[in-house]
Image 1 (tube, helix red, strand yellow):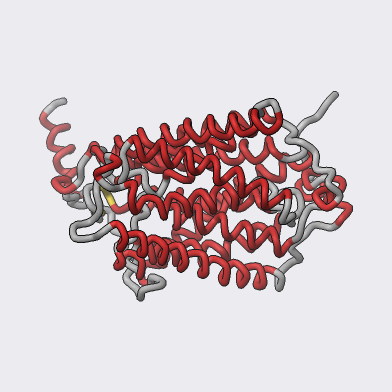
Image 2 (image 1 turned 90 degrees about the horizontal axis):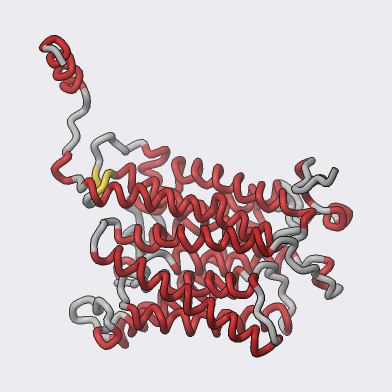
Length: 427
């Protein structure tokens, strides 16, 4: 580079905004950018493939479309209002709209050791996957327009306020709630919201007639599940917001819990039916991942194994009871796997974080009993808030469109009726 070029470069750089690089850790930033990509990968294409394989072939395009549309809508809503509601100064329940449209974001803003923009993007991927999880409860029977309107409202009324309560300085933040990577924020809200929605919409016609067909492609489901497993390292490990020991331990215990729960589910099916299914083992994996999420940065390997074991057993039992005896058509077991798993992990972290289980320990001066009460209180608030505002979101949606597709559409499949496309064409 000649002298003239050097002078031009210096002059150009002098015109750029001054960024305080001293407070930004490049390693932490690189890790959180990677984690952001991993969490988005969980939804697109991971969760979309996982759910698509579980439905009938005539509804495969519909499920894919729901996931892609919600990913786009949630991103825009997060920028317009979601991030401000979740992380701006407000009251104990909800943040104010002082940062609507990210109006306060400056190029040089920093959050901890990473750029504020990176933190916003990382949190956005959580706002994407949470409503996307709910899709599994009402596949094959909810109108596309209703899905879009309902989940858009739900993000504003449920997801963002609960995020504020837990992570954004709200009531549960002040109480010292332990939710490392979002079991209350993500899995409890999605699970409970899914259950309420499934009950409100009613079961599939084939569920009523006990003629539900098996998943059309366990292979797609397994591929999607594998993507979820890999992406979950960013989900839990990234929640440390740094590339340190917390992130490393979170990734390790996440993997261990998923593996244990998968084995548990496989053994239960073997004992009960004489054979183990591919769909079963990957569902067990998701149960283990959901259960370990709130505890992942606070526990050690023994805690990860215990949560995988307990989550695998309890989630299987609840899934069986809900469909088999209570007759609620939560089509893809969103409540049983995510809602129940999330609650289990949220409660059990109060003692699995103790030194006896190789955990990181509780906050100074906090006893196990006191932390347990806090965790239970957090579960109660989250569940109550989700029930009330999910029902409100459903009610508001009915002013714009009916919730269910017509009977003829359900019979023929949502793909061609709603989207004019087929997942598979045989020539």
